[in-house]
Image (cartoon, rainbow, N blue to C red; front, side, top):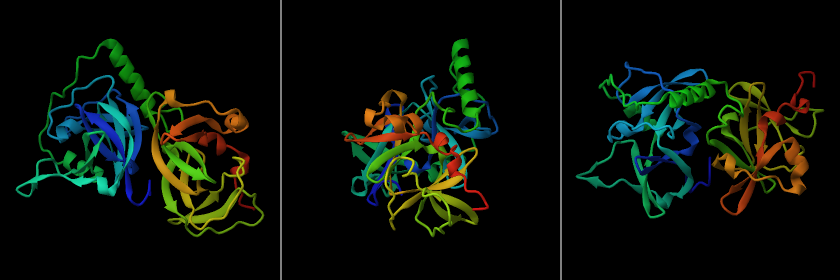
Length: 335
């Protein structure tokens, strides 16, 4: 679970001047608006289709789904890819603002008139932040309502893109269509998870994270290096559990309250043992700080710099691809 048991983490988006919160645990990726393919067979709440890493994905017109008219497309718009249940879709919004944690007592019910909400069912609650109201959305209910409309629009609200803008949109579409890797969404903000190890904070890209788990039964493997904790059963699949502390210059420690982060890259599937999952954080390239001299050797090999976290802390950006290319992280069958 992200945050504490009394907090919920939301990605804050902006649409036509209004701020909305999308549950952080459902966010898969944030990217600039790409070229959109027409999809007349879909309801009017679906703007079209985008190619998301080889998958044809519906792009939901959140503005129309909210009953606020068709989205007015701009080159600066963002696409939010979210997963609800077994379905993955994308939303088009004007801007992505930040990631906020709200205490449960801050979250209020939507006001009702004659026992009915004046907003769509997927707008489940609201919170006051910085003297403004933020409406909180349910990804699951949003998906249900987005495909309920029977209206079809033959003429979507496309702006008269210039040739230069069309070229930019096509280039973005090519990037978004590429297989997942750490470079695939360099041009947009990236969502990452901040974890804690021995009191130190580390950030890595959410595209590598398959899921978060509470500490399950781990079976030790004899005669393996200290960074190999053992193996665990992930719904019938045996995966290796690793401890990154030896690679990061941190002493190992045993804990019954550890968490596991299941990591998947093109060539690797395994789990990392960590102390705590702190939050999801949007990384912007301009916010990356150089590594302190004291950590320069670590930064040269595994890290890409540092980012501020919750104003008072610093998190190290880990290069997950580089870490899991190490031969030491391969556990051979004969061991």
